[in-house]
Amino acid sequence: MRPFETLRDLCHGQPMLEQVCLNWKSILGTGLAIYIVTKLAKRLYQRRIALGKIRGLRERIAAKKLAMVERLSQKASQDPGHGGSSALVTRERLEIISMPLEHLLDQLKGGQLKPIQVLEAFQARALEVTEEHNCVCDFITEARDWALALESVPGDQRGPLYGLPMSIKECYFVKGYDATVGLSRFINQPLPADASIIQHLKELGAVPFCLTNVPQTMKSYGCSNPVFGVTTNPWDKTRSPGGSSGGEACLLALNGSPLGIGSDVGGSLRTPAHFCGVVGLKPTTGRIYQEGRKPGSEGFLVGINSNAGFMSKNVDGIALGMKVLCNETKTMCDRDHRVVPVPWNTQLAKPKRKLKFGWYVDSPKLPISPGCQRAVKLAANLLEKDGHTVVPFHLKHLQDLYYIYIDHILADGGVNAMAWLDGDIIDKSISINYLAWSTPEFLRKTLIWAFIAARSPDIASYAIRGVTKTYQLWRSMKKAIDIKTEILDDMRKQEIDILLGPGFNFPAVPEDYPSQLISGVFVPGIYNVLDFPAGVLPVTRQTKQDQDLLATTYSSSDHTHHLVRTSISNATNMPIGIQVIGKPWEEELVIHAMSEIERLRTEGGHFKL
Image 1 (cartoon, rainbow, N blue to C red):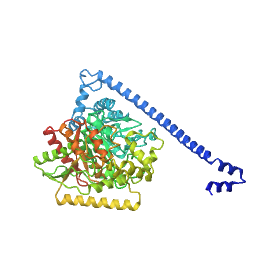
Image 2: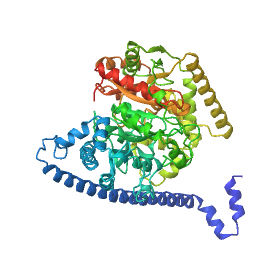
Image 3: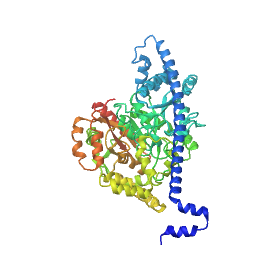
């Protein structure tokens, strides 16, 4: 006897249940249709609300920009010696934005330049740059008032950053402004107070003047979101500036800001520095402020450190930023309990000896491109010729670090990111992430093994991972600590001061590729696991010879190799950086090493913005 005949017998004599038994297919179909229609209607309604909020925000910002352009243009027209590069950037403004940072600060503190002059010069340039590359989300209206107020500060009370304009990554809390991280749900939610780092920098004399663009949720090394749109690379508008501090890197590369703040959870400021040809430093966790910025999702990431960090066109910018904060560790500790009171160490910053460097060009999965390998070896050769000791270094457990990074990033299965993405417009920069997060774990793993593993073992190797049990997380944390200890022991035994490694697997890629070549983040990301201070600076550019070697380096049938060959097939002349890595709490030595490389690179004519 069939089950539904039995069910019909049970319903016999009960008219309502008899109707259900007789028409269960149509009832089920109708219910399913109602559910689908309801979900679609809700989604369309949410999209309409999101688009309305985005449109309103963009209109307000456009009006603000227009008013700034009119004011700055009017002042420029009154300059008898205009002769600048454009209607906004006069000769005087061009001279200001072209000044070396130290000279600019001397001019400000000495009174030869007024803070408002310098602010307007960088505002003018930033307006031009963002018109071309869409790197600035919003301009901070109050910056003008802050700059004017600084003029009344007596000369002997002017702080180390007196009158210096600064750009701020959009995730930081600035009083009166949203921190959307590219999500429409956070539009029209202005912050009630400045982040501690913003407050402190203002007290030191800085003038925060704009907010720079990020990828949606900041979980990408692309740089686009539905709220503010796509930011493009300063040297090739078809390519990405990197992420998630891509807006910062783009603006700095084109002299739109003298100093900026980014953040880094997997190369988020180092990758943009590499792609755009600027400088960035991810410090040890707790060396400077941790508080005061919006993460890319709910919750708190375990085992992978997210850090605030300075970005600039040259090494002297990050040196300045780190030094002025670390000279006031008590203030930082009072405002943020996660700051460790490690004051600036002048002996480390200016060691009276040559250093010993260890270099490597290894990668846990995706090979390092010929140009990026050449960059490391070029820096090593320059240092060796200058009298430093340079030796190859075997960085152990790269594969394990690769798996620890992805296991911790995916430990929540994307639940915390999905909590914020629900009902929002999904950007292409995280489209593949979103697809993975929204697919049930069992189904996702089944589909990966059925359709992706054969075509790309590289993608399959990380797409199926993620520790989901507490005991797994504990063991993974223990393994990371053991690896860190072993690497530090190796450095000490070999008396290695600094490590040199690739800045990324390859130079900047077109904007559609970051979501497909996710495994690239592991090259910088391992230092978020190890919590070593790591900086990036440019040393060379992609050459035709580098291009010719791509087919040999990426010869595997793995689909990611095809994607890399395609994505950098026309990358000639794009910047290439290297990572300069130190031991925990030795940011001063890292910065010194970066300064040495920058000096040697400049003297040798190997890279010029």
